[in-house]
Image (tube, rainbow, N blue to C red; front, side):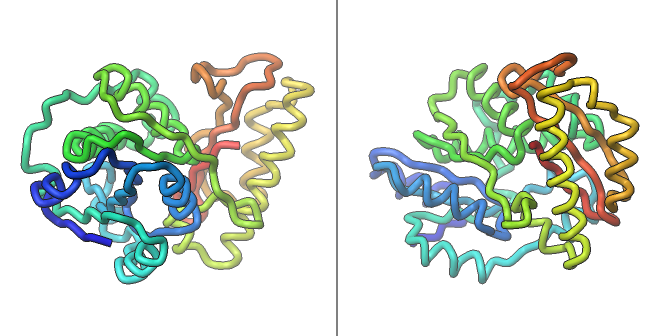
Amino acid sequence: MKIFKDKHTLQKEISKTKGISFVPTMGGLHKGHISLIKRSKKNKFKTLVSIFVNPTQFNKKKDFRSYPRSTKKDLKKLKKLKVNYLYMPTFKDIYGFKPKEKVFLDKFSKKLCGKFRKGHFEGVLNVVNRFLEIIKPRYIFLGKKDYQQLYLIKKHIEKRKIKSKIIVCKTIRENNGVALSTRNSNLNDNQIKIASNIYYYLYKLKKRIKKNYNLFNLNRIKRDLRDLGANKIDYLENYNTKNFKKVKRQSKKFNIFIAYYIKNIRLIDNI
């Protein structure tokens, strides 16, 4: 595995290849990241993983500083997976140039997490746009867990006619149903149990709503979630996963989207 911290050295190296499969991460690698990397390695192009905790997508400096980092463990995992390239840029390396393409931010960025995390998606799209310009990957591998983020990146790529193709990968969950996230390392055993109970509650609720939409009673559901241990709920909404329009009647193609807190730890999911 070749490690790069400078974009010019990286570009010189990957210019020799026929194409790159790109897996962007902020480190704290878990089974979800590993599944993306394994999926990437199945195609004919070399795999490039990035580790960069992007400060511009954090609303609070405290959250940025407390974001779990485990560089030594990450390196060990990536070497074991026989990743071809690792890009670990500095802030200056990523943000020290003006990208050719202007970020396109779809209006859906104002919904769900966009309501509660001002500037978050601007930060995400900004850094992704820069990575795409530096690396010019054939493929970029993204998971469904951050469904809104996935949708917005897809819209940016389409609008700006960027040649990179998104490969959408399923959400990886623990045996207890909890969606894998780097932030999960901040949860204790009791909090993990709360997250698991919330997942199974919503999973069963979705099945019932498919048969009878009138069961989607927000006040009652939020009360139940608080009883299960959610300290605060930012949002709980259901959207069609194809066009991201809010579902208002009987439908088979929808996901329940949620962002909630267990103590001061914010978790998101879509089920």
